[in-house]
Amino acid sequence: MKLSDFRVEIPDDLIAQHPPEIRGESRLLCVDGEAEQLRDRQFSDLPDLLQPGDLLVFNNTRVMNARLFGRKQTGGKVEVLIERIIDDHNALAHLKASKSPKAGTLLDIGGSDVRVTGRAGTLFTLWSPHVSFAELMKSRGHMPLPPYISREDADADRERYQTVYAEHDGAVAAPTAGLHFTLQIMNQLQAMGVEFAWVTLHVGAGTFQPVRVDDLSRHVMHKEWLEVSPQVCDQVEAVKARGGRVVAVGTTSVRSLETAAAGGKLQPFTGETQLFITPGFQFHVVDMLLTNFHLSESTLLMLVSAFAGYEEIMHAYQHAVEQQYRFFSYGDAMLITPSIQ
Image (cartoon, rainbow, N blue to C red):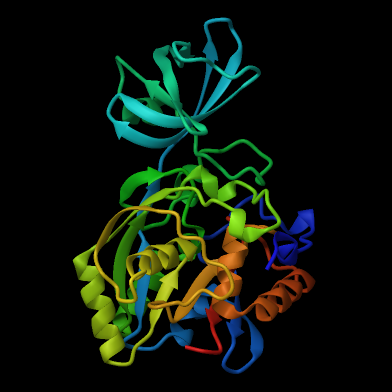
């Protein structure tokens, strides 16, 4: 398939610029491949759509206040988006400036010195000699809202662009399917016998990078760090043995599990992934997928199409536009059951 096959027209007024007033008050489009039907529900209906013994797999990454603003010694403005913390005083970052800074350039970030030390591919290597990057982000950082949200971040985004179960700092974008969960819904699910498992995948800014080749076989995926623990592997094995379903909360959970199962069997994994899932991919672990709506021509739309079926997803997106669902990070969700398990 080609990039142009995944072009979807999404009206600008359906791109959610703010989260719903109350967390969890989102719509939920159920894409039931087994029954070959679409159902319009509410996210609060999720407990009615799962079964005791199912296993929800969450990504517990935490979004860093990764966007920083400063100036070069020449006075020119610079925007820094921290991609990955190497250690307390070294980081990899995207830099946006009128002229690309060279190695040795000194940046003033809120009164703290940060030096550009070199390049690592498309990223810049940064050194903060006096203040750790964690402290710098805490005191000066902004929440890195996605590029399609056409406003500055607000104080409320520090809570709402973060899942209620976020634990491990490292992401520069939220695992957005998880934004709908409230502690009340999670308690309700556990009370009915749904089990939880936790993976960690630190979502990188590359998730928003457009695919620039029409021939998808030539696309190189960005790298993201993940961890799938032995405990998660044991939980998945147990749920499969009893006939339950593995329900991935978000595409990042899918990529985590399927990366760890690349050899055909789920095994503990810690490291980087560049897994690119397109139609024709053989899934080894995931039985159901809870996800938000994704950008036209994005790798995430390709992943969802691989899971649910290309025609089914194109039809679902057309339905969502007609029914005026809210799209992307702060938008509504889908619950997908594929036709073939």
